[in-house]
Length: 116
Image 1 (cartoon, rainbow, N blue to C red):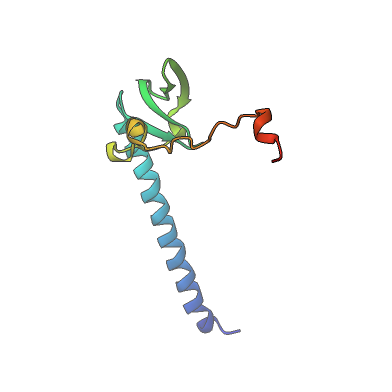
Image 2 (cartoon, helix red, strand yellow; image 1 turned 30 degrees about the vertical axis):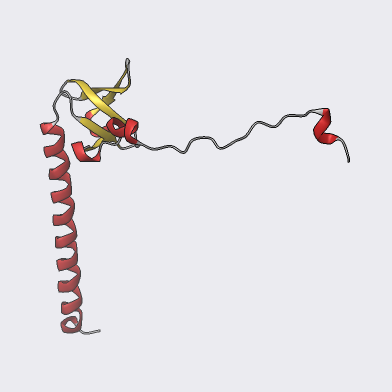
């Protein structure tokens, strides 16, 4: 095979690797920026899907309140994203309209079982 024929393939492969690397660097920088901007009181998702409110922050860790009075310690790297105020459905729990039970009481009386 001629080297001139391979040149376009090498150029295409190089361009693909360049843009893939660039996209990965942007994603990594966005994650670093998120971790540097975290503040006490922010609601966040972890990489495992847990939601919590930040109660304390150190250089490497965050303490998340995952339920009233339950605070757990996580690595900052486990924080995936910040929950925006309009995405937080926990505060709107009282507005949910759950259907009321439509069950009726069944009575077993001997009069109902009698054949006429």
